[in-house]
Image (cartoon, rainbow, N blue to C red; front, side, top):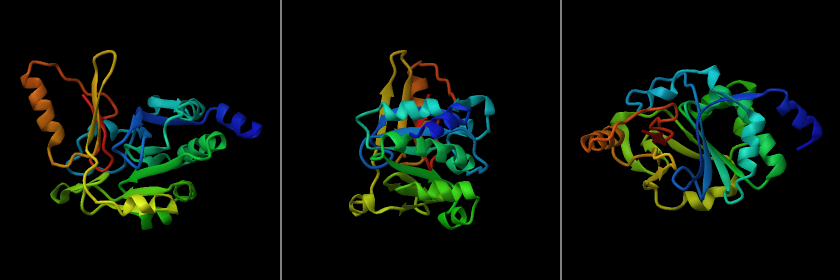
Length: 232
């Protein structure tokens, strides 16, 4: 990163973040870090993570801090931007990706959006700049009636767009669910990431866990079906 670029990041660029995950194999090609932003202007029916919808400036984290987090993960091949709605914070994410690639130019970038690609291409300058930095985009709102067993997305109206040639080979592979990744933290917290192959996954999982006598709580960072990822 240039000295000027480092100074700009240090000056206070911030990103409203719901949750991060160091390593994930079910939200994009290979092993990836995942960043879920906080805030979404859309209200997709069937959203299973209403906690990520409100915009929360108080959830802001310095972009420089997030750049350090990503560049220190030496065993990932890229980052997936989920949410919430990443393109609602496009300018901060452009700074994030530029900061990361100044140190680790080999890292790829993938993002989810409830907006269609043509809409984003007519969007703000920052939204177009973010598109220009992506290798993959999954676009379109989640539609519960169209829920399907698909790779990296929840309903059949959603599309995976290669925005660079990097993952063309991977996109030719069978289009079925990549599955769900479960994690248990050192503090006993339980989380999951991925796009469920069946509708109602979170509700049924919570019901079964509660039936075993475990208390559940939800924090910012649960999933929206078109982005995947959640925690209890």
